[in-house]
Length: 134
Image (cartoon, rainbow, N blue to C red; front, side, top):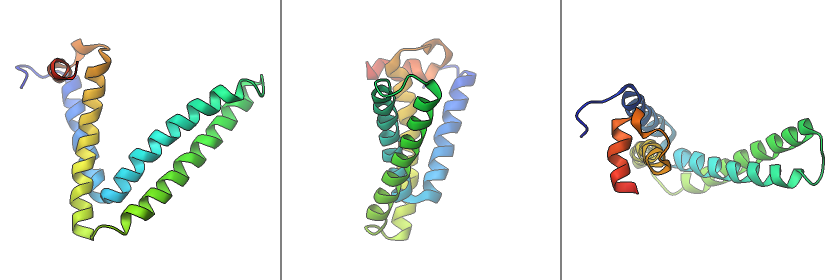
C-alpha cells in the first residue's frame, strides 16, 4: 500500500465503493448488462460518427444521429443482456455477484488510468498499480 494517499486516491476508493453498492442493488445481471451496454454504446458512437462524415457536413446532424444511435444501442444491449442473465441466477447470488462485479469495474478504472500513463503523479494508487500493469 502506498505510504501517503492523495485526494485522487480517496476519490478512486470512493468510486470503487459506490460501484460495489450500485452493483449490489443492480445485481449481477444489471451490472454486466450496464458494462456491456456501455461498451456497445461507445463502439456505436465511434462508428456512427465516422460513418456520418460521409453522409452530411452539418455538425448538428452528425451529433444528433450519433446520439440517437448510441442511446438505442445502449438500451437494446442492456435490455437483452439483462433478460438473458437474469433468468440464470437466484436473487441472493445475483446481488452478491453484482457487488463483486461492481467493485471489479471500479478497480478496472484504476487499472485503466495506470495503463494509460496520463498524470500518474496525482494518485499514489495509480503509480503502484502502474508497476504491475505496464
